[in-house]
Length: 67
Image (cartoon, rainbow, N blue to C red; front, side, top):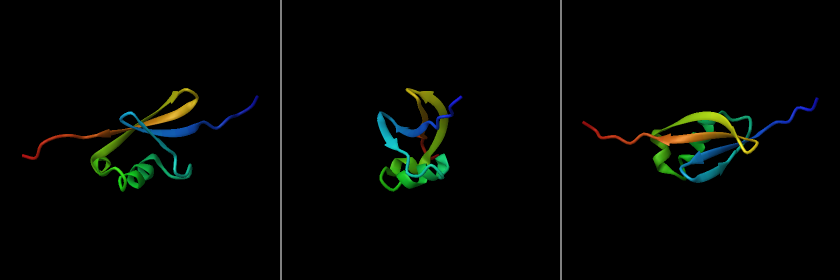
C-alpha cells in the first residue's frame, strides 16, 4: 500500500490559488491571500473536496448590505 499526500488548492471564483505552505491552516491561507484580494477579508473557507486528485478548498465571499 502506498500513501500519497494530495496537493491543496484554493479556489477564489474561477481563479485557482496555490498553497502557500502546507503547514498553514486553510484560514491562514485565506488571510495571506486577502492582501492580494481585499474581497477575501469577508470570506469563509469551505471544503476540502477531492477534485482531480487535489484537495480543493473554496473561498466564499459574503456579500450583503449594512443596515
